[in-house]
Length: 511
Image 1 (cartoon, rainbow, N blue to C red):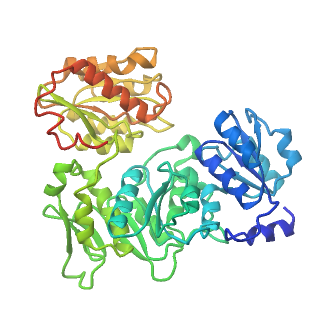
Image 2: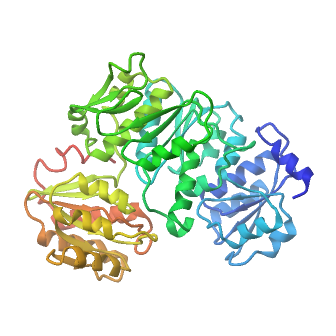
Image 3: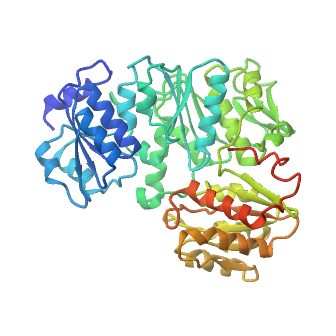
């Protein structure tokens, strides 16, 4: 890239800088790609969008705002891209690092940004909000929502955004402005985030909740996945929050280049040390943000108080502790956090009770899209009929099966590729009742799985949809998978749910 162009890009660190005429290629036209294109055209850049498939609504809007669209399978580099000669490429999350367009950019010396770097550079459009960053293999969305809820309860204008579904660029450009953005970051997004230079983020606080095998097909190795996640701590100004039960997160903090004065704040289900959050005799405690933290602690809430809201599962308690640490770093009093938890509800498809009938609880945790999430869900219940399977994303589910066969009543395997899971069950639990859902079409997968579960579940059991896998082999997404589970359970039960079942069950009201 010519030196003059590099110098210009280095200077683009404000909405109010001169972006006029900058030639930018945008890879992807999903929610993120569209937000990038919309932002850049508003800034006055010349924008070429490359998309493997056409979205007619977004395509029409692109034409109105003055961006060009090239719809191409993108299996090779489109000629229009070379002719455009971009000075910058902004890639949407999800495009593999070895994608032909990204490899072309590397060969041609075209800088590649992600939407997060662009959003950081233009974050001063309305007013400059503080950023709090959340990543991890599991629990990101719940922790992001909790932290934003705590901040808002304290009177701050707070927005959960990023991988949670609202592009950060949309939050940055919101005309009302925000005091704090709580940004959920996937490993895909973090891959493109620089840790130094004018595009590097400098968050108030950050957390990596946990680390386990996931997205190895995208990152190529666990090391690549780990290195992407570790970027969340770079340049943190006040609090690096980590999981005491996950050594990898502590090492990330130790290795991170942070700003002077940043503290390491641990969280966990055990007794907290000074500068930690934890649990003492059923009480969630803060021993980090108080003067006499060596001898005393601040009570946040009790596990008993969380139970009526369905927030007492161990992995959810960990999310609460992590979110509380982030909020406390931003000055939220513990009393505000306590009161906010009284109103908080988990998202749909996250350990959500669908029904209780005949003493059997039916739980939808379709959002458990990897083994680590499924493990946390399994630990929350006693005797389980487990509905599992889907796209394993390159991870090995063998250890998950081995660890939990002792709590299983039966296993029901869904997904188009079931051999690996079936082999694991036969290897580790040859006597366990094992069923495969052979339905070839989406419409019948959940009805068949639910019918099989009902045939073996006994009073006191939990039928748990915790697939430990992505859903796109048979469903649109994890929410579609969860909705179909709900429909199948309700269709099967009809009016048979206990009179005091889902209405009285504290985990039911979570949508």
